[in-house]
Image (cartoon, rainbow, N blue to C red; front, side, top):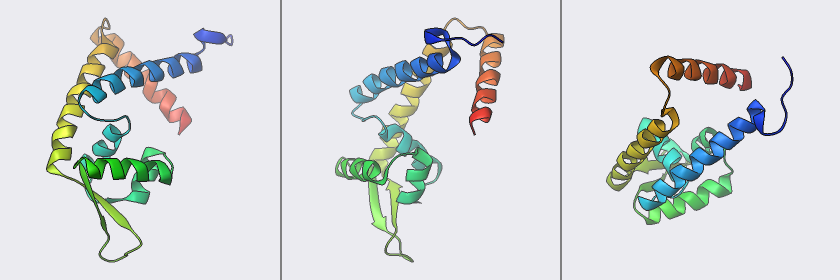
Length: 142
């Protein structure tokens, strides 16, 4: 296969798609009072509440300082609580609050709206093909 360059390369298209999707999502999230990144953190807590800060850092692929700032902001807004682990006082665990659960409901609606935007104009077969291709690309990167 001939190597593509510039704006038609797969890598460049993926970067552009991710950038535009994140920008549109951030606009909708900010309208709901949620900052970028907080949606991902609440997603992980909705799957497993009470995770350690280090576990969240690893899953979110962000720096400790970044998550620390995020946790302070989210705790101040009432979306999460952060407590020392009972068995290891050096470890903190993060829990989603009722307010955080309500915020996550808004996030889920925003993510669903973004999904509709992403697949607009694609029939079911095209959606399935795209999904399969993207899973293959993801597997190549893991």
